[in-house]
Picture: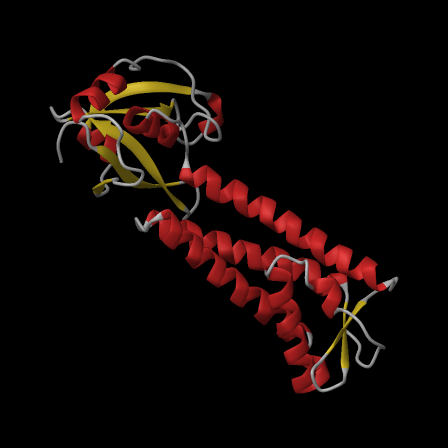
Length: 248
């Protein structure tokens, strides 16, 4: 590790087993500049940019060097940018956190991949639930949508199955993408991990919902789950046909 390196260290949210990455800039003399809350147990109560020893920054965990996104300035300028902010008050885990600060020092832009993952997944969940509801409305059914299977039978999938499945799948996607990011995988790789987990969970959730209808019901549910995860635009076209099965 050297002056100007963008460092990260794994920490845990207070009172939980969920980890996140705390970021800072290596000054090169055994100290690190980083934005932090006054109390890590109460991150919404404000904080400031501080200069501490690397040991205090690490808090007993392994320190890694971040390479993505790549720095836009030479090491000495990155250090100077970091030092210029020491003592600045203001900290918010959503819009002004340690990653926003380190990214600005290294690239000139404020961004937080961790925040983007969470916000993006929440937005995607809302869109998929809305797509599922729209599909139901499009069929004209008051209580259910009907998915015709390839073998000529149909499966009723009510919102009691569709909405929870969409939420659970997005939760699985969030967990997988977050874990991949924490492991140091690239943004593209972590997104792919999330999408793969979400797709599989969505298909599996609705396949289980259709199990009462036998193999055809399982297949119909899996297709529905895949379609909903794919974005919802094709869902209304898949949901059609007379009732032949019933969701329990």
